[in-house]
Length: 253
Image (cartoon, rainbow, N blue to C red; front, side, top):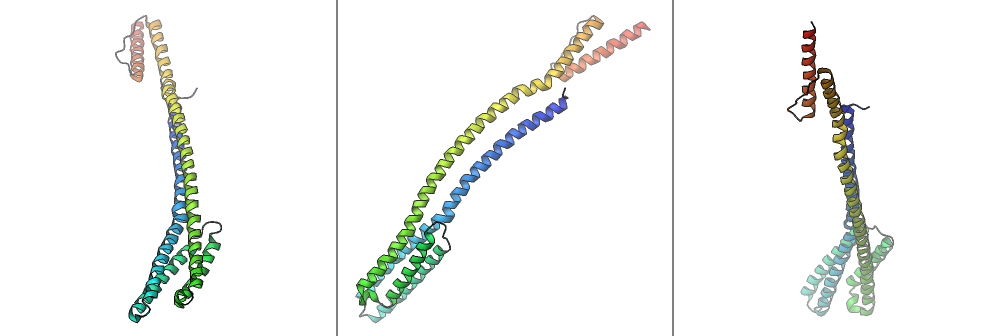
């Protein structure tokens, strides 16, 4: 027969274990979704951003080259455009380097190497003014460069969409798990709420009933107790038994 103290410890531990389990399940499942979401932001989104920036720079550079082609007779404007083009090429190269440091997917390294080689050829064509002297050769370099940018962009966009769908599915499964765990927890806590008071109070009530019966049998009296508190009731009965016992002993003497 376990003591009341032991039962109270078991009860408190039971509630703690149930609550702790729910917290751990929620933290673990939520952390899984967070990690997958961070993977999108860390792995694929930067590559989408870099490739998009390269496309914008390439379009701006292409427009600048057209302007430079038109203004070849104006040496001052030609030089200004040349400086602008050099700055755009420098910014493009920086985005390639950023992309090289963010290779996370299968096939992305090879595409980035092809992109880098295509840009080197394109850059050479710009400085050699092939867009003026040899337009077909320059257009081929431009087309190759743009196709590799789009390949990297599309690869990461598709993976973003795929991973996003995976995260949605994981989130739905986690919500279902958390819902089931929540229902199970409520059921367990409901059982504990009903059974624990009975486990703790029943022994006191049984002892109280036995002492009342003892009082009636030994002192042939009805007992009146004005409190409903279990421990106070037990204390009151005990005091009455002690008083009646002392009274009986004094009469015997």
